[in-house]
Image 1 (cartoon, one colour):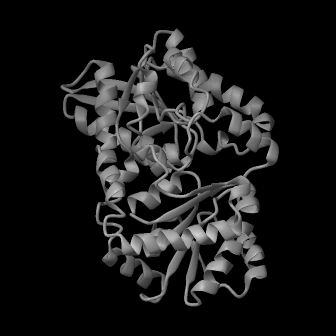
Image 2: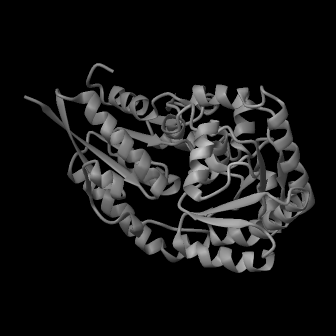
Image 3: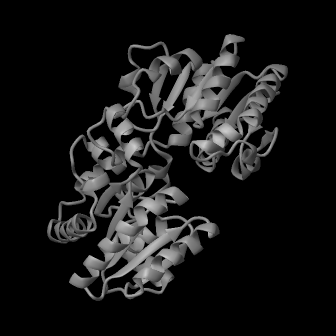
Amino acid sequence: MSKRLTVGLLAGEASGDNLGAGLMTAMRAELAPDFEIDFVGVGGARMIDAGLDCLFPIEKLSVNGFRDPILKLPTLIKALKSVGDEMLKRSVDLFIGVDFNVFNFLLEGRLKKRGLRTAHYVSPSVYAWRRGRTKRVAKVADVILCLFPFEPPFYEKTSVQAVFVGHPLADEISLTSGDSSSRAEARKKLGLTTTNTVVAVLPGSRTGELKLMLPPFLEAATIVAKQDPKVEFLIPYPRETLKPILETSLAEFSQLSVKLVPGGARTVLQASDVALVKSGTSTLEAMLLHRPMVVSYRMGKISYQLAKRLMRSPYVALPNILLDEMYVPELLQHEGTPEKLAHALLNELQSARQDPDYFLAFERLHKHLRRRADVTAARAVIRLLGVGSS
């Protein structure tokens, strides 16, 4: 007869919902048939499909920017108490906070003080700034599951067990997803010619990011188009509400051949020859698809000065952080002029076309990050539970 376990989880965003669902599925598979698991907490559609007993909609927790969390503070405090009380009431064997750091750290801390085992999935960016946060993580979590290999060493002098589990994107994207046949297939899907140069333009998915990033990106595109009149530009939009914002900006650049593509960046990157990318997860996706890229980022002057003082990493693009060298160009803030962005794009495109070894570093990183993250993470938390054979 199977024994039963109760595991609590909380994800506050779509990315966490994906991670949580993969972890839940892998835990069930690893412990079957000896154990059955009841999952309870908060998540999105994917976690619910994976069997989560969801206490309330994930949208109740979603916040953006600096103002939104302040306005939603009473709701968030109430949710924090509600979830914590439910975890204690159900006597969960383990609680796993999935990303959503500030909220989950508070919740994990409360539960750990009451004697519950806790794990946190996705390390905060301690490599970039506020490295003292490792001590805070150690106070609230028994195990932290890290997506990148450079993260566990930051926790070596703390009590938390840091485990490199790999990145789910590296598992999801096959080693051949960026090859010429995949490019041709993506172009066919988007109705593009196979011979023209295609540039992926990824200015971000938040309204504030678009306001700052899109104008210089489109001006850079104009300069590139003067060098190559047959070039085509692709801009993805993950939410329908972003389309009118993009269309308004594009009205001033009617001479450009730009196609707006609904959905995420995957197909756009697969169809492209080179990418102009806002710093963030898209740089990792471009790397995994073996696309040359130029990375940029802009923010308000005060925010930039503050971020500059707090930054502890010399790089912002994930490929550069992983390689610990300036492998792909980074043009940040005032350095990200349209002229410099265009020049860097054309240089990277030429380098990739002329150097057959250009993508070897990307391939090496891709293989290193392919660790079956769902399964590796599941085995780490199962060890914490002290059950099974992992």
